[in-house]
Image 1 (cartoon, rainbow, N blue to C red):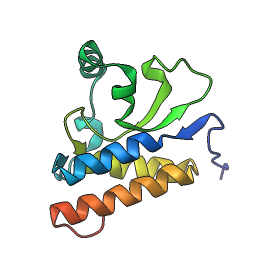
Image 2 (cartoon, rainbow, N blue to C red):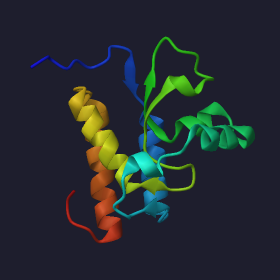
Image 3 (cartoon, rainbow, N blue to C red):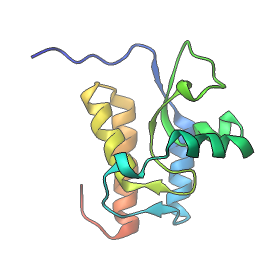
Length: 127
């Protein structure tokens, strides 16, 4: 089996973790168990959000950034966890799984922390 390595240019985005925690405490969380590939924002959704917001605000919805990319591009951000209105349980689960796959420990741990908060908030057990 091929070894999966963490992309060298990914950095954990602490501001996104803190923003997600705030959103969850405020009840702005989608507890539904859905397929994140269906629920995640489309490129058109991202463009619409960026029409009224800057890239700092946009970045709060992603648990990692890519070094060496322009910070004012969508390509700078990785591991989406919400739809620009609420944090999605399915998005956090997907980020946790993908971070684990790529051995991105900080993102995986952050997603696990968020998932615990979401599960408590939504009255659910562990994923």
